[in-house]
Image (cartoon, rainbow, N blue to C red):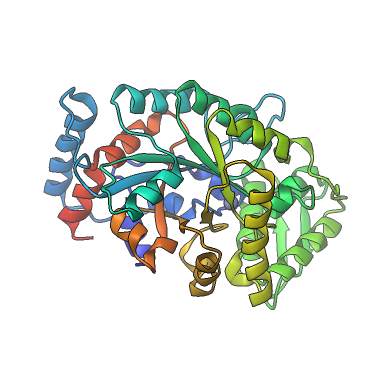
Length: 391
Ligand SMILES: [Zn+2]
């Protein structure tokens, strides 16, 4: 089943930390549900909360930590984004020390970490998932290869990165990065941009916080209009801001090359398709939607030794894709697809002819403050909590 926004929020850890703030500001694409949920407190029953906190302390602090998923048909897929690469001076969601700390925890506690493809194959062969974990990264930035793949390799962790193939092919750079570039490069502090059918947007700022808010406003508005209009509006924004957009991605926003991807394959990172241009698929025509999925899978297969037959939806929120995309993905013979909203990856979903196209993931926290969340997801406490609450 696809999730309603209410369901998504109820699945968030009660000990949640706002780790997805940066992701949400930059593009809000693959993590906005996580972010909004972290800031949306439910009216939790105090007794329930008390019991849950006790359970949680048992799980994280106690060496006899309960492993509630060990004999279950439930797995955990983590979703990651950018890693800090000093060469790129890029904005990043994941601290290196934090990521190492989380992977060290998973290894020390002997959780089973398997390739995403194995998780799909295991479930579809009717074998239980037993709490296995898969690590996924979205988009195909250079830092996924230069930093992410190397840290995963240090802990002998397989991972799968979803590639926006036009980005690697040098055909484009990401639309949200263009917005980021414009707001940083412009000398102006006020501009008006036409966007879709609504009244033109006036963007204005004096402080970095106001600039971030303006960037958010424009980025979010872009997600609601047809893809071609979004791209045209970003060109208009650049013009209004008196900024020349480079044809090629500036270093800080640059992709890995196919050679780098092949080199990552030798140290445990594999790659799956994530469209050609990273549009929100629901805002595209039938022809573009089909092309984006088909062509990105073709490019991944053509360039790589171990293409992963699982698709990831750009942005990945509930309204960003639908049956039309699921049909295309199925017709290509892929095993299924993953979404950007939170929840467990159940064997039942991965086997289902319909739900295998809506397999859920958890956002991986960006630093060690998020370790309690990780513990809650992988031990299965999050699952217990859902059951107590009847969600
Ligand atoms: Zn993406």
